Image 1 (cartoon, rainbow, N blue to C red):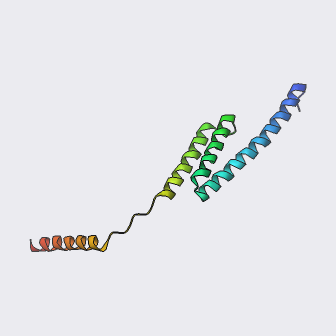
Image 2 (tube, rainbow, N blue to C red):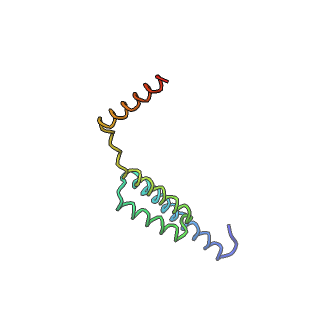
Image 3 (cartoon, one colour):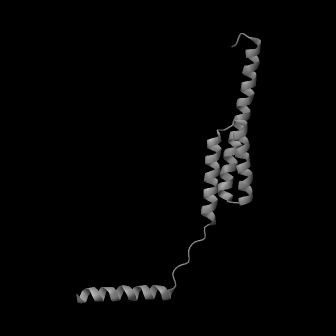
Length: 109
């Protein structure tokens, strides 16, 4: 326990800040997971904003905020990618015919 009156106050203040910062970090983790599952671009903007605010106030490091925002954007981009259509039967038949012709030509030699 500190002997100086001001030091006692510093202990009280740091305890309050620790609790508040822990709550903010927990909330950030929760909204990040929610944004990953929902994959809503509008909600992700608010999540990115919250990460920026937390980094600005010193709750988390600025590089951690950047990393989380990047991973969120990457997940959204991955979800937005539309699967490529399967090749049509016509193009598949042409490819098979070309392959067969190549094999026959190689067999003759």
